Length: 298
Image (cartoon, rainbow, N blue to C red; front, side, top):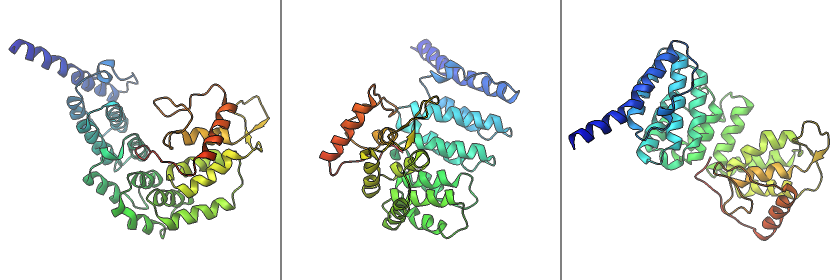
């Protein structure tokens, strides 16, 4: 029995040892991939302990790699304790002095569910809602995704600050996700004056889908039902325009419950016939005046 425990302990310790060796190599300038023993390890806690140390390293690329590995471990784990610990580490990473790391951490947190964030972490995120925070747009929308009501006043206050148009729009989207009617009305007013085009579909629609707001989704339904080809084909060799509804359909698939289009585990649409798929979606909307939203995904 004692021998078995020793063997098990040695097996669990090996990935952590490999991780230390790898990160030391990164410090020395190595660009080798993360060892398989680390990515395939069954015990995450020893790895996260190692990563917590290297996340404080003086070298940017070492910290960056440490946070990246932590994110990969957390998003693939089914253990709530592991996921919560990684969320805490990435949240602290938003405060990193390197803007790239800060943005990677706030962006990486969107791969977790609201249940992975405890009140302490939510308060930390709220504290990052400052004009000077790198990638403030991502942080604001992350808070909106969590529907953390105590941050509502802080988000509204940001609208009075001198922010970029991108940041202000993201704050509006975050508030809309949280059910703020004033922000929903503001967004709808902007949409009334918008022309459907590639720019709208690729740059604006993803944010609209993020809101999960029924009134805003009516606007998206209207694009689905349009028969005028206003968007460029994904084929770079084709100049023929296509229906914008094809791309909007892809965005909606991961946001609406019981959507009639099949998706893979990452929420990506799986379709061989897009024309038939779009027609199916149109019929589905015609027969569903109301529908539910997936709120546990960003």
